[in-house]
Each structure stands twice: as structure tokens, then as C-alpha cells.
Image 1 (cartoon, rainbow, N blue to C red):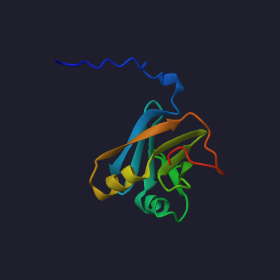
Image 2: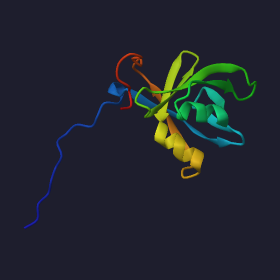
Image 3: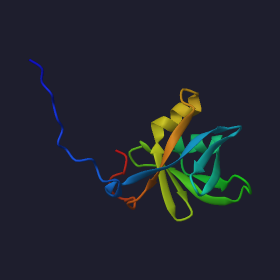
Length: 127
């Protein structure tokens, strides 16, 4: 006798998600390049990325074409989220995925738009 399992769980509503995939990041010469769909390309120096990943501080984010500073990169309190503040928008990617891009294990990492404001004193969006 064969059994069939039917899931009656409704599909999640994409409007209720806290994160929305908005781009990707990858290595480009001496920078970590962040491409935000519909917004542009941004660079973080590899030295700056290492400062953030090791938890030593923040690093500036630059517009790729003009190299003018437009934001900053920070590590979450839990050290699991790599946050990018570009203009008035906040983006995040898993810090472990950034480490794997830096080591060459992965070619690129996803970048997500944070729809809910990040709480600086409490928990992180990525725990």
C-alpha cells in the first residue's frame, strides 16, 4: 500500500518577509564588489572587509565609479551578519558567506535588503 502526503500549509506571503534578496557581492581585484539590483555598484577594500570580519571596527563603502564614500560596513553583535548601510538603506549578508567568498570557496554571496529596522541594543536580524 502506498501513501501520499499532501501538505496543506499555505505558501508564505513574500510581503511578510524581513529580508528581500536585492543583489550579490563578489571579489573584484582588490575590493569586495557589492551590486545592488536597480541601485548600483559599491566597493569595500579587502583590508576594510577583514577589519569588519575580525570584529575590529567598521569600514567605509564607496561608490564604484566615483570612489566617494556612501556608507559603511559593520558586523552584527552576534558576529553572524555582515551589514551594509548604503544611503538610508540597510543590507545584510551572512558573515560566513563573506568569509567563504574571501577564501575562494564561493564565488559570490547574496545581499538582502533589511525591511525591518535593526535593533542596535537587542538581538540581531541574523542570529
